Length: 233
Image (tube, rainbow, N blue to C red; front, side):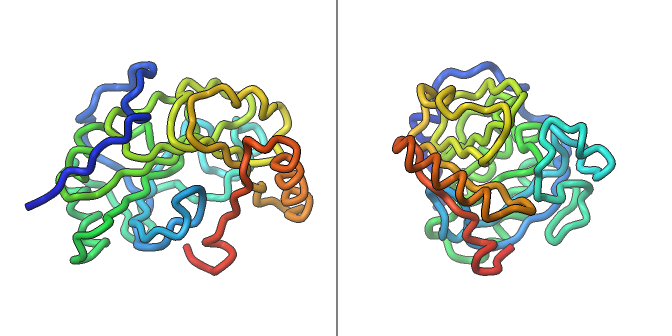
């Protein structure tokens, strides 16, 4: 018997209406088994499912300087990564995720990211994953409203963008970013406020800036990219 994961109360709160579900094929850059490296759930065994495509950057280096998000450290272009491909429907993709997870039926977690996952994620896929006893975690830039039924929602706002998804489980601020004031987010409806040092050429300076923010504003907690520290994908 399969067990349907229960959506968290936060994920059911009202937000601007997302596009309707059932949008056909899913383009996946990569999907693999790992440990979640960031945020409150860091260290949890998870299938990492990365959708192709983003609404803030094309993914081409030639476009980076002019992109709304120009510090992305991820390759989300195409479907040629490990476990990537195009999937005809939600059940096919959910079965692919289950195959990557393996036989264990306990504590199943899939982390859906991108690029921007809300360009493709729909309730059909969430339902197919829940039917296979997966908790569904999503990492989004917040410029597209979240689909209902997500079990753990992380929003990472980018400077100069309009964030419409202002509730969730954790707000993760990559820091430092010019044009962002952390105080602007502190009344939003999130359970956790996290500051993550930007992965950039001057890593030491970004660590210092993130630590300084957490020290000055105790609502924020420092989070690190643990998967990079220990050498996981």
